[in-house]
Length: 93
Image 1 (cartoon, rainbow, N blue to C red):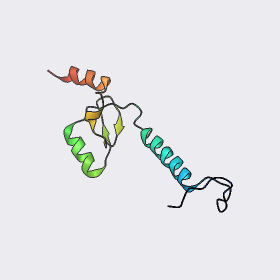
Image 2 (tube, helix red, strand yellow):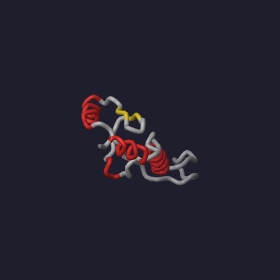
Image 3 (cartoon, rainbow, N blue to C red):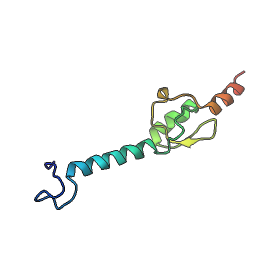
């Protein structure tokens, strides 16, 4: 990686240093990852066999509430989807 330069320094071309551009790019990528279709941030109820199938094939799953996605995050880190929970409780004997 090159040394940081300030605008107006010889050899800087009058622009921002490489480290500033890389930091801005990293911030944009992190923001996009946080907003990558996971805006509701809930753990959803899905049939176990469908989870396994999705892990092997990459095929999306459908939660009880109707959300369709490819699981990839640890569900233990999120609260349970209230709609899934309500549907699940009605299904139990």
